[in-house]
Image (tube, rainbow, N blue to C red; front, side):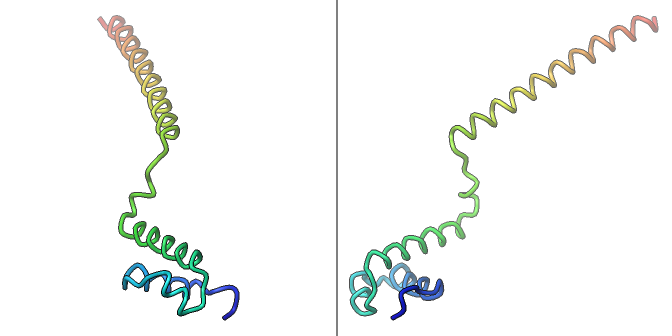
Length: 99
């Protein structure tokens, strides 16, 4: 067989292992393929299948990303609080002038 396998062929072999429960060792022997390769194809297929089943799982963030996002959110909240205080003071000044 040719050295490089098509993505379709790789997925076919992976489905035989993952979906049909065939043994990687047996398939490697029958199809004259490297067992490590088809195990990797099966692992990739499992990951792909899981991503399709759980599209939100890709949105998970690392701890450092979450910390950066939290720090940014806290900074913006502090800025808004300062703006609110400035507006409150301005309202008091304008209300004094009207009375």
